[in-house]
Amino acid sequence: MEIKGKIKSGFGNASFWVDKINQVFEKKYQMKLFLGTLNVKLDHEYVLENEEKIKASEYGGNFDVLIKKCKILEHTGYIVRTEKNNKIGGDHPLDILEIVSDINIRETNDLKDDDTITLSIN
Image (cartoon, rainbow, N blue to C red; front, side):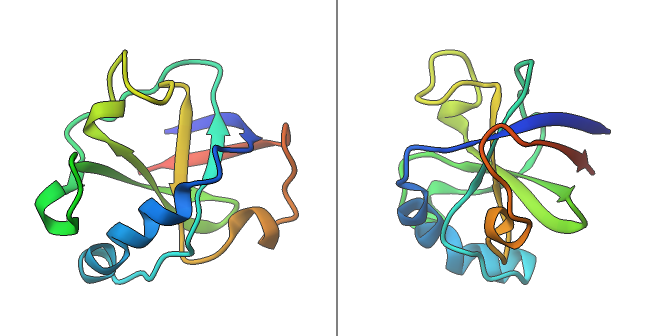
């Protein structure tokens, strides 16, 4: 499935959370993550369903993290979202996807806020 969205700046605290899951993520997916996320705003809400997860107990957090593999501009990435934020009433809107990868996708592809990109979701 392909979906389009626009690049958006985030809250600026993703590196803390990515660092917390990085060791577990590397063991499960053989990818050491860049300490940050690429935020993509969709024109519709997107709920992750029946996805792989990193359990809160595995990384010392309060919520399980849902993981969905995707392809963005020929790079492998993963959509990450806590179970708390995968429903209405979470801390983040459902029309924002946070993408992690082993590279800084924004800088590598010279992306700016409001650039339109296409995600291929596996």
